[in-house]
Amino acid sequence: MALFSYMKDFIHVYSNNFCGAKHAFTLRSGPKSGTIGQPFENDPSLTMTSIKDVALHAGVSVATVSRALGNGPVSAALRERVEAAIAATGYHPNLSARRLRSQHTRTVGLVVSDIRNPFFTAVSRAVEEAAYQADMRVILCNTDENPEREALYLRLMQEERVSGMIYAPTSTMSNRLPANGFGFPTVLIDRCPEDCSYDAVVLDNHEAASQLVQHLLAQGYRHIGGLFGNTSTTGAQRHAGFAETLAAAGLPAPTRFIAPRTEAAESATRDWLVSGQHPQALLASNGQILAGMVRALRNLRTQIPHELAVVGFDNEPWTELVGPGLTVIEQPVDEIGQTAMDLLFERMKTPTRPARRIVLQGRCIVRGSSITR
Image 1 (tube, rainbow, N blue to C red):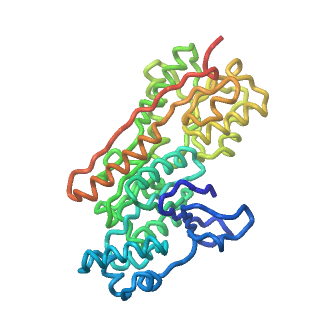
Image 2: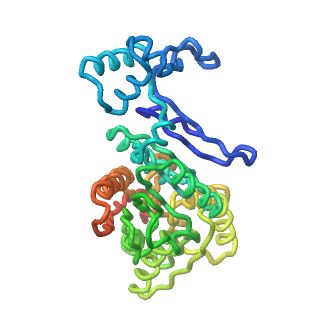
Image 3: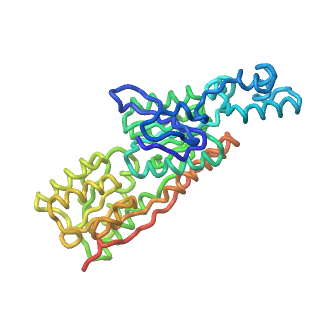
């Protein structure tokens, strides 16, 4: 579990990965005294301070402190005394109690389908950064493409009274999103049917896949195959761009649909190559598939691009470091996260405005894995 150390307030990360139990991880910010392996009992920033401590320090009643915190009727002088006491004691209001009293929790729910996918990791950071700038916290949930976990986390969003949600649905849910929403502003990312009535930020997947195929065609490749994820509208849209571009060139589009995982891609690539009928070039529809593809080729000692050209999605650091460097579509992950948050803020302010679908463009980065010599 990666620690998001840059949080302003804190981020909750919900997971079912530990012995089947459900855990909520609260990652707090603030300076940490002590070293690794030592407790933080002596760290003043982690000392629990109650509202009674604030009242005692300010010389007022608990009720007065409570009114001041809730912008209730107190004099300016008393409010200053309470604020000074809060600063001196390091008191942080109980957010759970606040949620019980208010419909405005300043909390954003972020539900992704596979946090192992580098795309979602990068987008999550962009969303958190935007929330940080807006003085909001983030609850991050990973469904792992499991509809049961997804249903659990959607209920959790309601129980937590989130101010809004950024959501990458599983393939099951993306085909049956509730027409009236979830009871709070929601913005879809990455996966969104064409007829969707939600705010959404997506990549132009059709065009991105087409760019990769056009590049391969320009390099002289004519027998081009593809490995595509079988769990989302994203994979389907990328396959459409792949197949239609090849069809326009009068060429077939040999395709294998697989689980969008590294292991599945490694197995599928190996099987394709040992069949003796493999293409001249292969396209991977996401970063995990690309990683599995490259691993299989290395294990088979297949030379890239001399024996097989390779292109794919997601400009992860490793794609530049492996020889000869991989040709990829770079997705604007920071822009996706920021734009999704912008749409969410707009929806919070204007709940009845028409839904907006923002389509962003990827950038084809050409490297040695697809260059003919």
